[in-house]
Length: 193
Image (cartoon, rainbow, N blue to C red):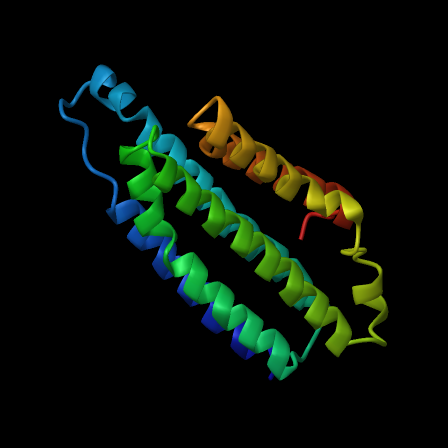
């Protein structure tokens, strides 16, 4: 499949999911700064989810500039990832309303981990389907540092199930920041594209 056609489809899906995500946000109980601050858990959960979606879009935007075709396996992995991230608005609001709920924490963390794994698998499959692409080889997307966010998430799961219930929530925030920073450093995204 041509990447331009797929990228257009995938961008549209991400835009819809981002729109649904923001539409799920409730208004503050009172129209004041205090009312807005009461919603801090909702806003942080929204920010985490938005950054997950934006980072997927940004990484794929850079990746698809280097390739022209995708094989069927990559398309199917992206399809499964699309299904998983389409659940993000639901689990984001569930977590935001229940920060001290282990099931809400767990499902949000599971969605994050599955998304990270699927994104990694899809990227690797794109690399496999374009083995002679010099520009793609220069992107260096095979660094072990890209696994650090998953390790932070595992630590968050351990914390949630032992001593600190919002451990997954906090680890997701740290993980998405690491995912963005490490991705930029490993890929050298500072080229202004």
